[in-house]
Structure formats: C-alpha cells, structure tokens
Length: 559
Image (cartoon, rainbow, N blue to C red; front, side, top):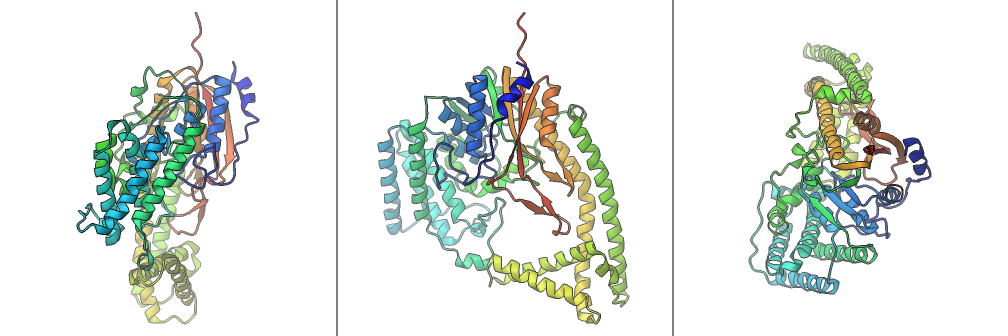
C-alpha cells in the first residue's frame, strides 16, 4: 500500500489532549507512581498504538528509550507484546513497576500493610539505626531524614530477604519504587526542577518531613494504581524491559518487532533533560538493593555522561555519512557554522568595548557611558550584579528561595539605577569595577564554548543515527515506526527540525514517508522558555509542539 493512502488513515487523529498527565490513559488519576522528566502523554500513546494496531495489525512493539514505561503500560492494556530498554537504572525500575502484573492481590496488599505498620512501630522503639553513607548525603538530606530513610532501607532489605521467591520480584518493585519516590520527596532538592539544585538555607530551616509516613502513602497509592491496572488489562502479554543501550538492540534480533513507538531525548543531557541528575539520589540510596533483588545494576553515579550524546558515550559512526543522509541536518550544520563564527566575532567585540571601560576606571576615569549605552554589556553587568546579590542573600540563610530571588532583583535594580545617574560615587564605580572582570570571563567562555556546542550537537546526531539504524535492523519488513520528537533551539536562534532529520534518515534507508503529525504541548513537563546563557534576558522558546514522525519499512517483494 502506498504511503499516500496510508496518510489518509491518520488525518482524523486528534492528539491535542488537555488536562492532567495521568498515570495511564484508561483511568483518570491524581496519583502517580513516581515523577520522571518529560513523560509521554498516555492518551497520545494509546491513540497512536490503537491506530497502529488497527491499520497495520501490529502485535509486538519496541521502545528503545523506555523512560518511565508509558508505552510499556499502554501496550499491556491493549494486549500487545512489549520490548523496551534504557540505560538509566531508575528508568528500568519504574518501567518494570508500571507494567507489573500483580497476582494474588489480597496477599500482596495484606503483606504490604503489615510491613508498613510494623515499620512505624519498630522505628519508635529502635535504639540503633545503621546510617547509610555516600558522598554529600548530609548536603542533600537532614540528619533526621537520613536516619528515617536508613531505617526504611534496612527494613526493606530484611523483608525481601524473608520473601518467598514467587513474590520477591513483585515486592521488590513496589517497595523500591515507593522508596525512590520517598527519597526524592524527602530530599533538600528543589523538587519542582529535574536538575539537582539545593533549597535555600531559609527553605531548609522550614523543611520538615516524616519519611516513614511518606513511604507508607507511596506504597498505598502505588498498589491501588497497580490493582486498578490489573482489572482492565486485556490479555496476558509479554513485557520485556532490559537495561540496554539503544545503540545496540542485538538482544531483540529474531523477536520480529513490527512497530517502534518511542520518544528519544531531544539532545544531550547537559543541554536538555538531565535524566541522570534526576535519578542520582535515588540510585545512591538504593543501588545495592536494586542489584541484589532485581538485577538492575548501577555502574556509575552520573549516567548522563553515558546517555545519548553524553561526553563518555562512544560513537564510531562517520559524521560525513550521517550528515549526507539528511539534507535537513546538512543545512543545520552549515547554519551552526555560520552562527558560531558570527557570534564569536560579536562577543569578541563586546570584550573589546568592555576592556575600554575597565581601562578607563583603572585610570580614574569615571566615564562609563560605553557600558550604559551598550544594551548587551549593560544587561551582562546587571546579571552579574544580580548573581552576586543572590549568592550573598542565599548565604545569609534568612530568606526562602523565592524571597531571595525577589530581593536580589530589587537590589540589582537599585544598583543599576545608580549607575545611570549623573553623580556617581567613587565607591559605586569601584564596586562596578570588581564585577567587570567576571563579565569579561563570561564573554570569553562563550567564545570558546561555541565550537564545543556545535561539536556536541553533531555528536548527539551521530548517536541518534545509530539508534535509527538499530531500530531498522530489528523491524520486520512492512513494519512501522512512530517517533515523538520536539524541535529544540540551539545557539540561541537556530531551530532544530528533528522531525525532518528523522524523515530524511528513514528515506535514505528505503522507508516510505507516511505522515508527520503535530500536537501542542498542554502539560508535558518542560519549560515554555529558557534564558540565554549570556544575558539571561533573551527568552528562547523551547519545545512548545510535538511532532510524530510515522514511516513504514517496505515489504520484501515476493518472487
């Protein structure tokens, strides 16, 4: 069947869902088993799967970037076999838990209730708790929290040691997922963000949490979701989730995968979503239990360096071949080179202007008109002032993080307004002089970072191309692929057309281009804008729209 006919199948599919990002498409729930960065929308995933099942009669689906397991769970609901992989150990834990089939529900519920009740009772009388230790544990957790989490971990280990083999995996998945979620909620991180940022001292003073109570609530919520899932799951299916690299899917050879549905990273972890940072504290607490009871091994604390595009992720593919396989990527490469050269000259010119100001102050010339009239230099200086005030206020420990931000902005405005006055005190000029070398350093770092940024973008695309080749190798002739991507912005102004890069690659591999669908983000957890890394004033639009690339592998002609 030609792609133009297939295209008609998809035109009536509305993917612009609104509302909460539910645990699953098949029932509305305010609960969730665990937070996770950039989770796919269940309603969208199930709509795509239903269409693939209806039009292509698929039975086996693979997702090489399984994440928290949304595709895995929706496949189970629709009676499809699923094969998933990821390099993040926490991802494997969550995906396996989300797609878990709970048998003998009453026994599991009773056992877990007895366990959580006993923990609370035992903790009240515990005279000695062996405290867990890892680098910077005291930085991320209060002493009382460390004691409570250490006790929970100790009791989980004792419980799992005494479990029958038949239920050990089920209990381990539930308990360790609940434990991981408790760790995140009990930490001194700013939980609204996925990267690791510590609360302000003022917020830390006010932060008090009962980790034992949180853990109990997490188990109850998780178990109720799993029980509900079991009630509406269709038939018994295969769900196989392994900690494997998407760049090598040889473990799936011979499985006859007839559909790929995946949402890959949109860039390296440093510049997009830091999955490793998000997972680090949970893994530091529980990696020994994950290995012992679930066979999920954690080899490094910073998994970001090994994920797609990471600086320690090896890639031997020819960049020339990758670029030649996509006219869109070739155009992007040329545009990056142009912008890189243009921006480097611009920042060097700003350094030259800034040095004239610095030289004048050094020679007791208080004329800073160059700084005042140059909007970008003015904003760079303003950002440096704001950062200094922020650090000073944060160190004092008297205000919450929100209050610190507001007060830092207020003090910065006062300082910059004084700079624009005709009569400036010598003290004000000298304070300004102490900040300008840091502004200069910022500009120089930007100049040296530009070519590295281009190199990292190309490294990511080299690695993504390998994944595309791997999915092609495991897909049966006539199989279909659906990739959910976003168009990110790089170097401040260049939009990366991920959908067309993928389309180009698949066409170069002989695929039929079926259709590219589009939907607006309504509640996927990503920022609407990011700030320029130089001035922090120029807002850059992030991925406000998702694009679903659908392509089909041709069938081998019958001789």
